[in-house]
Every structure is written in C-alpha cells, then in structure tokens.
Image (cartoon, rainbow, N blue to C red; front, top):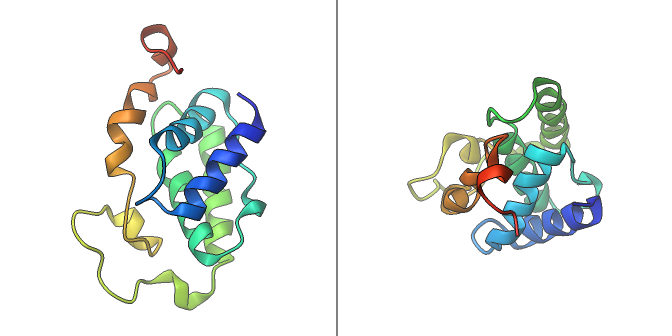
Length: 136
C-alpha cells in the first residue's frame, strides 16, 4: 500500500464523517497502520470536524495490540497534537451523543465511533491476518 492511497482514504473518511464513511476506506486506514506502519498526512485535514474524526481514528486504531509500542506512542503523540490544535470550545459536544458510543469518541467530541466498522477491520488486527485473510 502506498501513502497516497492511505491519505486519500483518510481524507474521505474525515471529510464525510464516520456515519457516512466507506468501510473500505476505514479498512485501508487500519491495515496501513497495523501492518505497514504507515501514518496518514494529517495536514490535509482542515476543519475542526475533520481533525476530530482523524484524531479519534488514529487514537482508537493505535490501541490495538498488533501495533508495535514505538509506533503506538508516535500515533498517540500525533493524535494529541491534533487535539491540541482544536479550539477549546470544540473539545466537548453541545448535546449528548446517542448511545451506544464509546467514551473515546465522546472525548473527541464525536457523535459516532468505529463500532459499525469492527466486523470489517477486526480480522486484520492480528499480525497473522494476511496468512488467514485476504486484504483485497
């Protein structure tokens, strides 16, 4: 996979939001992080909503055990810098999120999480994923 593919998928997910994102784009991001140790270009995100979505995605996906510790800390630092770039009033949602939504998404000020994509991406969380599943 190349970074252009990752960057394009990342931009589309962040621009459309998690509610309207394509499962293939989320899978591309997860596999890029988990198996290719590639990070998306976060400078392509312009609006606060895009930054919140992108930060949440990175923050969530780096917490899976298949991510090496050094990459995990690099991703967490990147997500934290994204959070720090948000205006303070954007840190909290105006109205409560509809349940069920995970606490990490709420902390990023989002109304949606990655829950609906888990069945698509979980087969790839193992370092052995490509031995028993195809990425195609």
